[in-house]
Length: 527
Image (cartoon, rainbow, N blue to C red):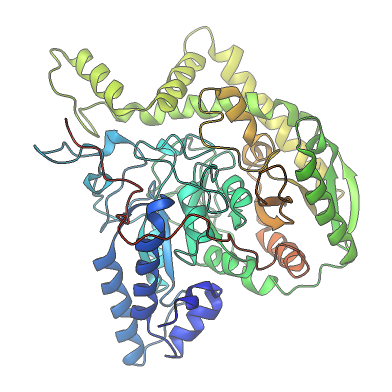
């Protein structure tokens, strides 16, 4: 079968499978073959479930042969971030603390030894019910803590536009999976920008829904008041279809919303003339790379050419977003990750002589540097004498940030801004500078703190210059609560005239058939 079928949109491919013009098994095999050839140099996947994926694809084909109606994702290969529980695949959250002990001679850092959940996350179950084919678990920063995917306990994912650069994080593997054409869609999670930022840096579409619009049941928690599951795809309509499948009330998640799920895909053809677009001056301040600003402003001019009205808006508390987020998110992380102690959950260190020593040794060996840093910060801000000074004050500022958006949405329908202040930076450039790394999320954090929906859609990539290749830039669209359909409509309208439409990486990574499909190098073994 022609592997270019993988370069179609999700609605197109699902239609081909539904009509029997191509089999789900052929599509799945093409996806697995492409992963084997390409992913060794990219590191998008931690584990690939070839046998399970082919079995699921055959089940879709058998269902069609029986004359049964197929779901909206019929035969579509999908990657799933490895922070989402899957009953038929290991789940690691990118951490060694969720690996079972290695037997003698076994690799110590092999993600295939990850925790085996007895159930599927709700979003995973909904993908299966829609007849999607899950091809594997994608790479991520450990416990979703990071902006570059360099905090994975196993190996970093690499940007397909330039493998010497980061793809963004924490859902970097999901973004790479889609950008490199390994699968047609992927699920990620967004706590402070972890869908939108990697989507922007890899030239894909990523949607962070309204808080509660998509169930968090089965998502390994980082910061429970901020975490949201959302889709990646190569185009807006495909992302909208994925969102429509996973959205909706879930009785397993008390924070999920019961509001009806809108017709996101149908909204992609809606006329956007007269839509009021707010442009916040706070997002075009010092620190924004000139080439990124140029691309975003050209996109704003493109929206105006579609008949949208551009208006200035003010979000004055944006400047406090980074500090507010890193107080609240670390506090919640400190609480959520306390369960990984060697007794109740997770791996257990050997050789400890007391319960306290067991806790310390297990967590010291199991958690990476960034996770440990955030646990310590979170424990500090929740400690006696500091709760009021840090945590309570941060909650008050969060309310002010949310009110900024409420005020702005009285005047405009959508807010448009950059996603990231820079293009993808080189691997290793910021790994020893936490503050510089945290500032990479400065434009995505406010929407997360406010709980409002936001998406990233590609605009013109930066031009190649001085040895730096052309790199993607993302336009961020932010809407009022539960207005994902409005964002999809505007993003699809922009996509129709965007200079980035149809652009894909030029595959500079070099295709090899001798690399394992789950890692860019063999797992690390005991000496």
